[in-house]
Image 1 (cartoon, one colour):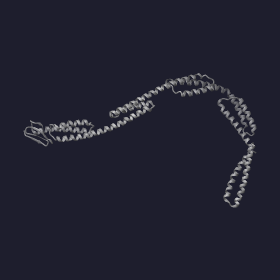
Image 2 (image 1 turned 45 degrees about the vertical axis):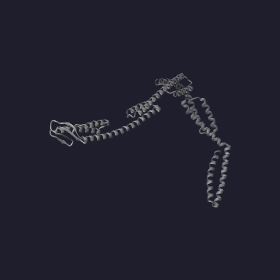
Image 3 (image 1 turned 90 degrees about the horizontal axis):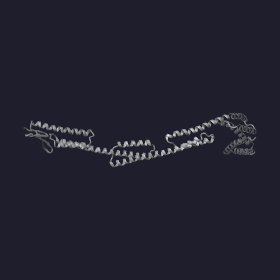
Image 4 (image 1 turned 90 degrees about the vertical axis):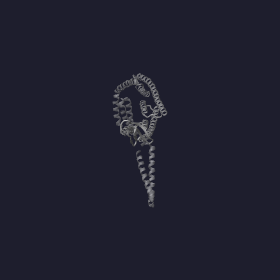
Length: 411
């Protein structure tokens, strides 16, 4: 058999096939049948198969999220295959490609580590926030339905977050579980106390219903109406009973009130019908009383008003819907007569008249003195003194005019 050579291998005369590497030649196989070129072609195809496997691994590393550990396994397997390959080709180049791929995987491993560390940091912050909110709800929340639903969502958020280091994860989960248990316990205590309050309210309201029903037939209208007002105040202060009894108790309580107030309204209506005649009498009395106005003679007006008041008292009570209107008209007449009396007293009061006369005399004397001072100032040409005297005269003349009007009221 003849020999054949290639840049990366050869076949000697006895059919032994060699591959050339940086470490020297090594035997990769033997070829006894056929030409040496066919032997080289066969072992080159094995080399090409290795190239294909390396290219596929390179593509997976560069274009997919292949975990670094799996990539390392692939590189190790191919490195072993290249080292002992029964193939002819540039095996040193394949080894270099695997070295470069190993470096790329190393960088990817570091990136994954940094990403994982960042994710764990974020997950820790997320879980610490979840625990803090859960503990706040456990300590403060009183809207039980919303609080329970929020805690459920916090647990779901916890499960969706990345896991962190086991000691921290365990400690935070214990705090979250404790917060949930504390909230549940506080809610149970609240509803237990609420049941006690409702039971107390039921007992109190049954007592109030009994009291209301006991006086529903009373005809002592004033005192009983006041008693019902007090019962209503106590009813509001008692709080709510259980939902199953609250409505029935209120129906009985209100029914007792309605019975009493309906009877009172009927009695008042009957009495008002009897008093309609009194109202008509007082209407006529007011017509007579209004003739007193305007007051011309105070003494006669007072005597006439006294007669009107006597007739008014004798006429008796009137219906409630007429009382304020009729008494309001009478009060206006009484106030007018009283105002006239006060004016008459002021006009005839000798002490007041004397004070008014003294005031007028003092102002006239003061004006006379100011007029003399003004004349002297003008003769002497003292402009400032002239101005001061004129201003003082203007003021006192205005005061005198008012004082003379007051004195005229006494004439």
